[in-house]
Length: 221
Length: 221
DNA sequence: TAGATTGTTAATCGATTAACAATC
DNA sequence: TAGATTGTTAATCGATTAACAATC
Image (cartoon, rainbow over all chains, first blue to last red; front, top):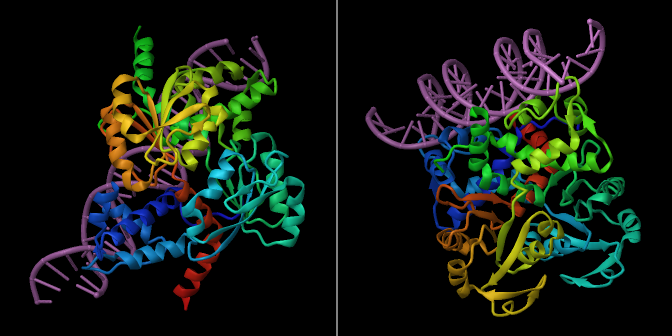
């Protein structure tokens, strides 16, 4: 991508975390919070929180701190959650169906317009009130509908080619569940949910201590 | 956690990516690869690849590069994928069921031993050949079985309390799908799949350009 | 041996933390 | 006004990149 983000990835990854914690605080009736307190809650330094927030503007007030609801709303806005998105799901396997049924999904302004799958066994079934369409219909659907986001939940082998169709069809964002690093044109946003990568990191962490005991022993011996 | 990882998070997050690309290369019949070539494929610098790999040992050979299969096997070992894990799934909702049915899961040495859910509607149903048990049975199951990993796919509201039960029952790793940052004892590994965080990052990226156009305009005006 | 490419040390870059003046 | 806490600049720390000697 040629478009260079103004905000570092480290910060962007923390934004949804801020949003989650602020929602919790709001729900708990907390009206104001200092960067110090929020830091303790989130395991971050007060400094880092102020730096992060000030990438986008000065939403606090000296001597007072941050107004919880106000800051939460600003972050929702920053995250693009005050907009509506037309979403399609490509691949109606386990993951595609789980996403379709994810309640939080529809609540936050993401509305599922259509679901596609290549398998005859899945075409026509009802998922969350939507009939699964055959994959051949994907291109013509994109021609006749505005789709903002596609959930890509197809096998690795056809992920890139499907992504190409989606982008050509005007999709602006891909939520990619295929275990593949997609190559996409500038201006198309992607975010990956690499489940097996995540599981592998878990097993790495479970084994790290023993691993280095082996490595250290070998280096000495 | 008191145990300080010897390897930075940035490196750990890249390990599964190396593993994926090396498997692909192996499948494509590639026998050897240089850090240069691998870097081009993975969009990393050759230097970074050599640094990453050398956290764990010198698996390459001067003048030759890396033997694909050899390096792949070393990384599988590092990731703890040459071990077997007893896994239980806690929460048989959409996500719990999707994970249970995830084929890659069982292939890589993770074998599902039991599934639990609190809902009477789900108890007794067959998921991937396993009958869902009531949540009350969880503690006694942990008492009588060795469980390495628990997939935590319960609502946010009971995620922490369920995690506490799991840890008390001897679980060493939690694959957490609840939108919560768990507080766990040292020595228990966690990795999160925060789906809504991931979706929020996608919508952030889709909107960043327009966001800063607004911000910049406001600062000028 | 000459060429290639690693392993590793040094330099650079960027992110986090600390400090403090501005200000509510 | 005094106290608190932000916004922001400066210092530090860590990760990435560059360079090069070691060696296959």
